[in-house]
Length: 496
Figure 1 (cartoon, rainbow, N blue to C red):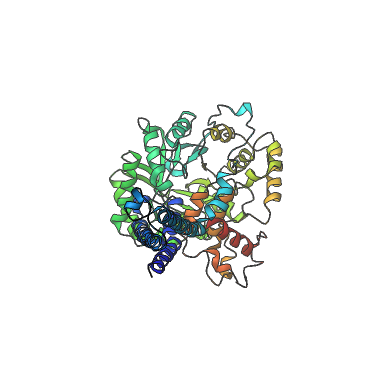
Figure 2 (figure 1 turned 60 degrees about the horizontal axis):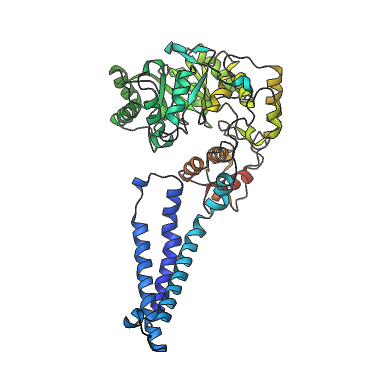
């Protein structure tokens, strides 16, 4: 009877391992804030394992006493015996192995997907063959940021993956020394660690930097209709992390909805912050399917000072027209997503060029005089050499040929996130653009944990594509096989 009880308890332990503890392990592996994670799954698992182990030991000892006389010695005096001890220990080891196997079955993706892409694969993050002439490159050109009248470095620092304990402070200080004077950050970059790193880097030299952040919490954006005080609170929290009394620019971040831009609470809050000297200018960033509508509204509204838009070589003509109109309205224009997927890191054929693909892409963007600057994510000091070598330079015929070659190589794989042509075809209303963007972060940027974390937050994931008739097929004007790419994204970005 007691043996059956022990087996039942181990089955409970195995089920808890698969259904409960594995989820907690997965959250920790994804980099979730451990202070916000519940520890009851761990406690419940320990209780189950303890109860199963105790029942197993009692069963083993009783069985040993029934089947053999107890030998002399300490174990015998306890009524255990060597045979009972070994039987119990072996049964417990088997139960623990089965429980561990159940946990592993749920989180195997960290070994077979993330492991193969991170632990056992060397991700190329910058040009593996840097040219000596790039060494020590500095900002060579500054441009006017619209009616803010600020003169900002044409190549500026994006801090999406910088952290305070991962060298972010030192890198940002080097950027300042090299002439970069525009920093872009946000509370939801690296769980607010980006702001903390930049705050330390700017200590004693805040006046050198044009500083932009976002109306966000560390967990995401503020929705339309948020209270006035909520808008004020998130900016004041940013000021604390950034160790400054003011920010130069606050963006409505990753905006896909005009309602967020027209929210009267947003504008009342910004008016108060500006009156108190805590924020100087208002902006909007967008790399979403409704980018055109969002940008058109911001240009016509008159209350926004800066637009940060996804812009790169091969961008559709309408986007260039939007940028021209913004510049004519005296809005500053900041370009982002300038590497068009950063897939060059997968193409050895591009590495024989005199200049890097990144430099060619930057020079193409900056050839548009309506662009005030571009923001690019930095995470390694050597990127300063490679990226800043493009500052102040015009694209050459060789650069343009390299960009054409890149477009040939990425045909059918790159999603233009601000296109949105496929979205209405999806019966599940899946955010296809976000799914494929997170896949891009995983495969091309080498930011696997970040990509998986973002994907986990989506309201719907691409498992809805399983068994779907795929009315999205053929809707992409760029030839992306949507269902194939979204299902592949789901396999990469989940632990199942």
